[in-house]
Length: 115
Length: 109
Image (cartoon, rainbow over all chains, first blue to last red; front, side, top):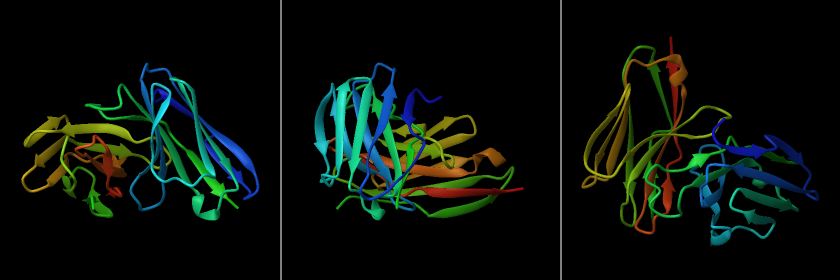
């Protein structure tokens, strides 16, 4: 148990489906992040939330929609995805947005396959 | 642009020593991280360097040279459980984490 829990662990969805990924942390952290991890590529930062407010959106397609209802929960809503969106989606948290001297705590990820 | 380079894959023998290199070109520098990620699992924090020199933590050590834009992770007395991917990341002047693609380390008996 890493302190950051992601569900589901695996998801297969069609291109016309709508699904949501969930992330939960009870570490008392104020910042939460969504990352995309594709094989042999660097982690791609998608969204950053600090105290429930979005502070970063790295040109992510609108078919990905984040939601942060409180400081412990983060969602990624998915709709009309493309096969190239298949990847491991990682959630992470840190005590503060900046000066996270000890880095991030990651969840185990959701392995997404778009068919 | 900002860039982190590390070898794609390395192979080493159980009980031996392996050094995984990381070179970076970033807009500013506010620390370098190493993470370990076993297949299908979360990346876990290994080390953080912000000043030049060697940081030792048990079997793992991490070295930083800011003037050379270079770091390495040294793993001693390798065990089979050390088979994993090792991710290098640099925090730039905007406190953004810039990630390398990771080095897959294969340990053979």
